[in-house]
Length: 310
Ligand code: SF4
Image 1: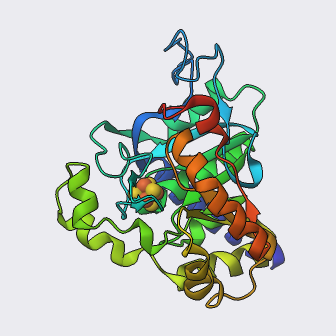
Image 2: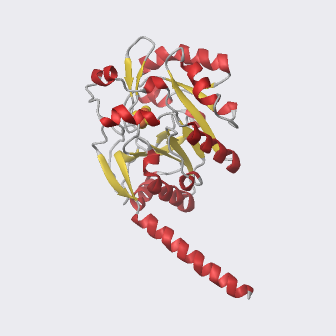
Image 3: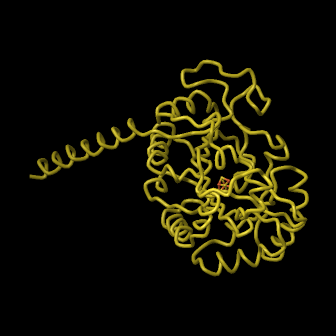
């Protein structure tokens, strides 16, 4: 009797696996720019560049921010975002999303099969152990991201960081991720008419309305509970450039959330250029020291400036 039950269970599991494999085979991801970067070879192993944008004769770069700053990694950049961030600095100047080619204008987007992404990672990963899924907002494509993360884990056994703005949670993605790198956006990121016009952007539906979703405490709480119950790592990285930002972080986020780890709260200086970061640094450092929060650098900007694909 036991053998018959086990046999049925195996057949059912096999059918489930076949269904999941079919989902993976059919899944597509819309990536932007180079998609997988920085690389020196395509999915078939043919050379694509003499030098990637890093200027190095090797695939890969380092993670520039957060707990894993300095860690050799390959990045996968997904197209589109549900936000359109433009910040104002303390001196009154504006600072637009540093990946606006993925959020405001993902014109250079292309559909990739999961297999093509995996093969490209395989050809370029070398001795690196880390893949970073970023955007735009990768969770807008949660079905494809879940399929990709499953294959990265099962076939390539790599560490996965998910970089997200924390507005969408999905268990099917979360179960394959090792580090949730969440960057919730403060009210300073909302793109006012004046900010949009200064960058020649239209006050279109996306820019006007999408920021209604920027603050979602329930979603952040889901990430925190999930990370705690599965012993996965998490960081809440706030972009800070104004003196009052700490008050907002406490009032709108930390006073509303429970069960987070104080060590996971990080402030990151606002800026897409070294001179902007230098202006934000004293404000960020003051707030970190005053509140016992960690400072995270943005090493890739120090090293590569505002180049894309690095
Ligand atoms: S959430 Fe991130 S990717 Fe989206 S617009 Fe804001 S800074 Fe850019």
